[in-house]
Image (cartoon, rainbow, N blue to C red; front, side, top):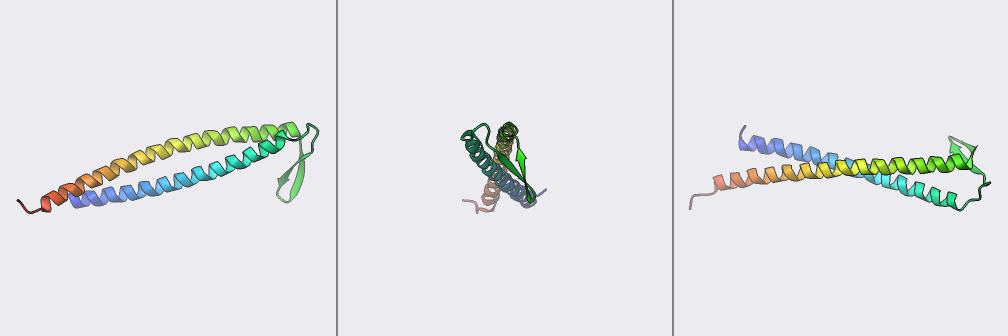
Length: 121
């Protein structure tokens, strides 16, 4: 494969990796938002009396929910989201590393092409 074909293939791979990275970062932002929202709910629950009435919105209906169950659900959700954030972070780091490697390969080939095209001194 010629340098220009190799460069084009690497550029395409780099662009795809950048798109994947962007999507993964957006997913992480969504998880962070959900985490923050659930932390707010958890703080609200902490201020409630044990006999407080909690309702959950299911479709267009409010259903009464057991306080202990509601608190447990929120705690579990926070643990799950935290785990997902950590998993997505690993993916982001891996994608950033791959992007960096592709960028370095592209720069190396471009440098070689410039040296080949430069007139002899």
